[in-house]
Amino acid sequence: MLNTIFYKPVLKDLAFLVLRVFTGALLIHHGFEKLNDINNFADAFVRPLHLPFPIALSYIAAGSEIGGSWLLILGLGTRLGATAILGTMSVAIYHAIITSGFNIYLLELLVLYFSSSFSIILLGPGIFSADYLLKQIFKTKPKFIFNQELINTVRVPTTRELSKSIKQKKPFAFPFSSFLSS
Image 1 (cartoon, helix red, strand yellow):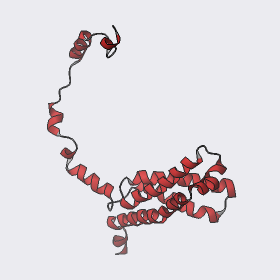
Image 2 (cartoon, one colour; image 1 turned 90 degrees about the horizontal axis):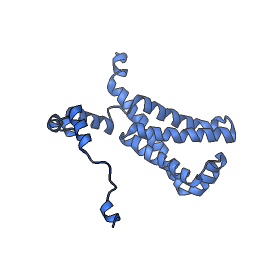
Image 3 (cartoon, helix red, strand yellow; image 1 turned 90 degrees about the vertical axis):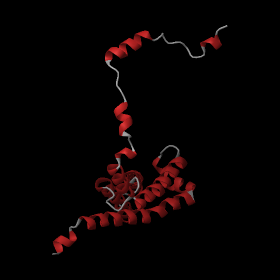
Image 4 (spheres, helix red, strand yellow; image 1 turned 180 degrees about the horizontal axis):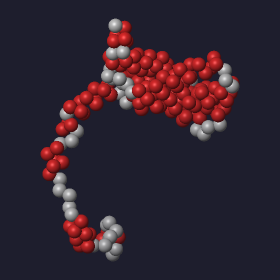
């Protein structure tokens, strides 16, 4: 009885929804904290790694956390958002190890965000997402994207026709050559 309840596909997709929404909702404020004092973040986290353009990279880190979190919450471009978060967390884990060694108190939250985003990349967003809805729309209405009548009327020329048209063309002339010569 419990086996059928706990292994229903809907519960699996509900678990993906909870993972996505909580990861995004809990991580989004870190991006806003970075934007709050971007110079302080650049001085404390980017410059010790001797990376170029510390202010620009700080904005990229904040943007990837905010944008990636929104993408996770909405389930729209979920794997793209999770990849942005994964990249930011990779650099943050590297920074924590370089500056403080294997300090579990610094690494635990970073590793949780890293593993959440890594799991979302591998498993996908689930059925409770905008990605799933878009996939269903494009699957059931392919003419929405491609007009089959237009595709069927396109005629591909033969190689003989192509070689004949190439031979008939004039050699390359510089555009506006009549304006340049007197």
